[in-house]
Image (cartoon, rainbow, N blue to C red; front, side, top):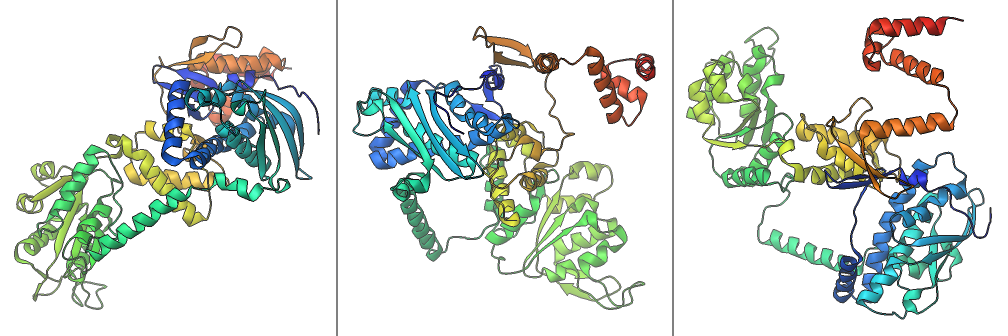
Amino acid sequence: MSDTRLAFPDLKHLVDKLHFNPEEGKIWLAEQRTVLMGLGALSSFRKEIITTLGMERGKGFFMRLGYYSGMRDAELAKKLNPHATPDEAFLTGPQLHCLRGMVKVVPLVLEYDPKKKHFYAEFEWIDSFEVEICRMSLGQLNEPACWMLLGYACAYSSHFTGLDIQFREVECRGQGDQHCYIVGKVATEWPDHEEFSHFFREAPLIDELYELQSRIADLEQSLGFPEDLPKAIGEAPPFTSALEMIDRGANAEVTMLLIGETGTGKEVLARRVHSMSTRKEGPFVAINCAAIPPELIESELFGVEKGAFTGATQSRKGRFERANGGTIFLDEVVELSPRAQAALLRVIQEGELERVGDDQTRKVDVRIVAATNEDLAEAVKAGRFRADLFYRINAYMVVIPPLRERQNDIALLAEHFRKRYEKLYRKATLGFTDRALAALHEHDWPGNIRELENTIERGIILTDEQGFINEQSLFNTRWKQEKPESAQVRKINTRSGQLENRSVESLVLDSLSEQVLSQEISIEAVEKALIDKAMQKSDGNISAAARLLGLTRAALAYRLKRSEEP
């Protein structure tokens, strides 16, 4: 398909995706969180980057910045225009440039044939923001100045078409020309395509920094610094304080008690204690006391002699003997039976134990790290836990904060798990959408880090190769974050250009009514569709469906009967 002076599709469908929420300090363009920033700040930033890195590295930096934005917008364009023709859908990218206030784009030529893998395009840029900031900080250049816009055009076109597309700015007002004019085609059709592509690779400076980092790591290893510690990811003050306590107590022989909710990473931290202690060459043995039936917990912990009970056909070491010379981690220690608590107290006090069904005393040398998600002091008061054992294991207590108190760490942990499961499933994604990250921060995480890990794994599984992980892939369709009834979202009135104060419910109804009217759907058809959907979601239960619709059961029953009449 080919045309000159192509016309853009109506911009309204994009403007409708732009929402302002000043009460929360957020602006959304579909799933992308965006910001408004003055050109003066960008001009100063551009000048500093060029001064620090030099012209070529600075150019590559800004082209890659535009490239990352173009990748995300290509994904957005496909979702916003699933039924549009290829050229109409493609033109969403230039329209997004206009909507963001970066440049006015005039499409001149667009030849795009997916079947023949052919692409050729020409665009004119009017009032490029990069020309303006270039003139502010650097004056007129001897080369084209629209680096971010060019990187965006290359990435958007490549990811939208699935072809390797490169654009060149053949004229630029930043170098004294009358217009900014770009031409794009399949990369191999440019004689310098290999040289040009280096702008989209990491700068050599990064490689140099990595090389220095590697040398420092080798030096630390030669000096005997600890390595291969279990990863404790986090920068939130409550977590770093707990981590400092753990690291300080790791080399002591004192029994350590970790207090934290389920899924907060207590076993990872227990392994860290072991790895940093003088016992790191010894075994690390972990056991969840709640997972072992009460009648078997003693034999599991302290061993059993042959014939001690039915089924004990041979003598067997318990976990404490297997951990001799190392560390044992007792998770959910509050679940130990009274007899097991007494035996554990003996191990702590005397360093000795007896196997079930045996009267021979055996010495063990074990560091104990215990953990629980309950208040042990309350368990003592309730008679569920021995007071003398509590005082023994409570000698060095560390409280592990829940994930909801570590908001700054959610993105770090999400990225860590993303990389882990991308490697496991041999899949490369483009990371999280801004909406997805916002949803991760808004969730309460009752299951803490374990729940977050499972959520990210699900997101990786449901995301296409080279796709963005969105909110829907992370949280199943039944999960919905509660929003305050008074929450206000502001969008632009396309006629006045002003922000409107609208509730979320109002926006949904406005969009729905517009679609209904544009398709000339009758009100009777709308009512029937709502009733059918409510009955479907309620598995045919009229009372439940009535609650969904805000009706009484009698009112819904009447409507159902009326709809069945000929």
